[in-house]
Length: 128
Image (cartoon, rainbow, N blue to C red; front, side):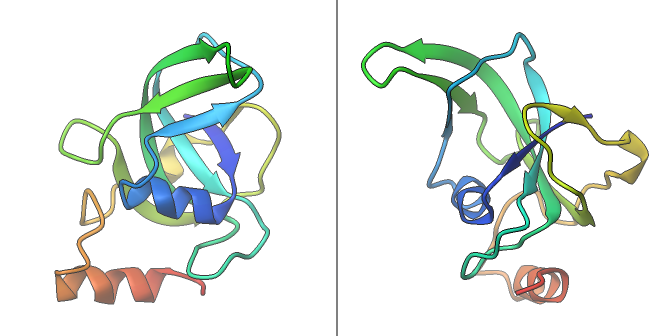
């Protein structure tokens, strides 16, 4: 699967639904599932050095005002973006490939902090 390294705090914003656009100075023709990997740098309340979700990239558009590409991410729901069992990944620049066999869906599609089972799973998996 194609993968992209992003700071862990931005990934947390994405999986919490607070960030639906990823800003980049470069574009790609690729659309579809994209493995998001948290960079090795540690941020409070975020995972680092692991792939944690698959974001569905719907569209990429150029924004003239910001001089950036806007990568549009589908919401976390059935058939859209989804959480995975975290896997250790060494980040790279631009898009790179991670073996599909390593990627396993999490028992939850999205963050469910009102669900004690989600919190138990998340706390066990996170390396904070």
